[in-house]
Length: 390
Image (cartoon, rainbow, N blue to C red; front, side):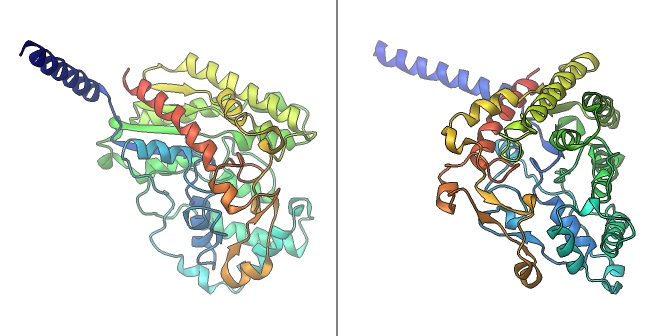
């Protein structure tokens, strides 16, 4: 009888301990994400569909996930984070209705989009060329309509978005208006004071910087290190803006080593992209430590872990892309005109089966596959758990 009571007592004690652990584990009530294609659930496609005569521009699915709106094959790291806490994460650029004036425009958006996509050197064209004028017209229309009212959503990340908003070039001019500070302004506009009751229990995630590193690495300007340093005050300003609006918990995620992406690995740009990635992370870490309380702003470096994750794949396939897509100008005119589909083709011996079975670390020449994002999400989840317990 004594043994039985002891076992019961031990079981009861164990239940109390477990219950205490669950009780003390804090969880965010909501989640808001800012960033680029590493976190974009389809915002960039929603924007293009809204402000053009296109209705459902998408990538081939499969392999692309989210109805062909995401540059990967399953979930993104921030989606696994949201899933862990039982929070719904959805694109913030769902427009309430189409722009009425768009349908009245006679110019063929499809033809303009097609020609500009096929021309990888478009931004080098002369400004008086007909092609340049047509795309200028299209981008002007996008800018005129891009910040119209949208339905509720909590993921503001947009593919190709940057921290800075002063990059030259016609197409870059468009994404300047979708940069980090613009994303935050949109969030503030969507969540006015009467809608801020849960902001103290909201986890804000900022995961951006890769496109700035790429833009700066590819530029002909000699002062690349200075350009990276110039990003830091913008990041600090962005965090301050969120705090002024009421944010109490902000998680800033560092950039991976961009030089390890297939687009740069073993090329003339590998060394500079790796160095700029390292500089970006070092300086951002220093500024976050200097200007913010650890209880309110958490810093999560992922570069070393990203490289460690990649080493799980064999050398010969580690830096190979599974697919070729719009990122490196893969384009099928017939598919686009007939189905508004941006073609995605398997390359480097990859197949849907191999992708599903996690045989490739990289989805395309820039973006990782689900296998990598899922492992990165474990870092986000652990950091968030530690952060919220402070």
